[in-house]
Every structure is written in C-alpha cells, then in structure tokens.
Length: 180
Image (cartoon, rainbow, N blue to C red; front, side, top):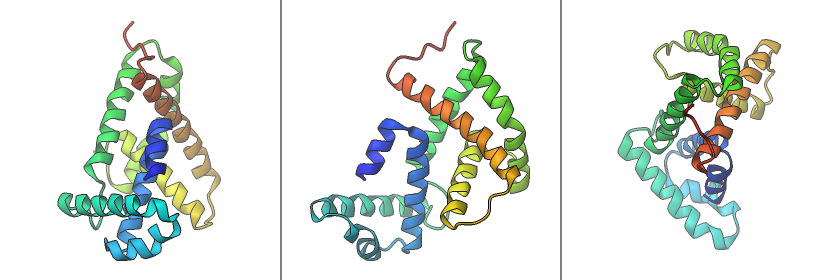
C-alpha cells in the first residue's frame, strides 16, 4: 500500500503497472484474504500488517463488486488510463510538444501491430502500451527470452509512456501549459 501511494506520487505509469501486478497477486491467491495474509502480508513488518490487510481486503471487495475477479482491471486503474489518454490526446493536439508527437509516431507502428496481434483493435492505444509493458515485466520475471524485435518495440513504447508520465506529473503540479 505504501509502495502504491509512493508510486502514484512519483510515477503514474509505474503505479499503474504495480497495481495490475497487485490485481494478479490477488487473483493468484484466489481472492482469499487469508491466503493473501499468509503469502503476502506476513512478509511485512508487524506494524504495517493491519493497514495492508485492510488495503487488500478493500481491493478484493472492489474486484468482486466490479466483476474483475477473473480478469480485467479495477475502475480506479481504468481511470488512470482514461486520465492519461486525455492528456495524451491534448499533447498530440498541441504544437508545443513536438518531442511527444515524435515519440508517439515512433511507437505507433508497434501499437498497431500489438492491437492486431491481440485482437483488440478497438482498445485504447495507451492500454495497449501498458499491456505490452506489463507483458514485458512478466517475461522478465519468468526469465524468458525477449527477442530483438520485442526489445525495439518496447523501447519505443517505453519512451512514449515515460514522456507521458513526466507530462502527467507536470500537469498535476500545474506546471504544464497545453494551450498555445
């Protein structure tokens, strides 16, 4: 929970990927609070456990209520994608951010290819980017080989998401001026 809070303040992209990982951890433990306490919470210092137990219990309840126990993402996480998509579109519409537009057009062929491969052609582009980054994380955790083509695609997507996360942070602080 503390990690999520810190990531949300520091890097919204890392926060979202972390939260997707938490959703998968909850699913891997059968959305069972006792299993989560035994397998996850018990590894933390005693003084943090009560707060963590409550946090996981709340997330489990949200997952059940929202019908994302088997797959999908919590509304709080989908809202991050929506907010970032809104900023993404504003950045592309502005002539003040040519580096962002360049990063987008460099990543776009990979995004289109991924959307074609996963059969989710109507999926928001940023969701495709985050799914790709999350998939790369899972491949690395499983110590699986990453092809040069995948590396190249991930570099472009990662650069785009990183730029967007930086602009998101500036926007949150009131330091981003989108209008000309």
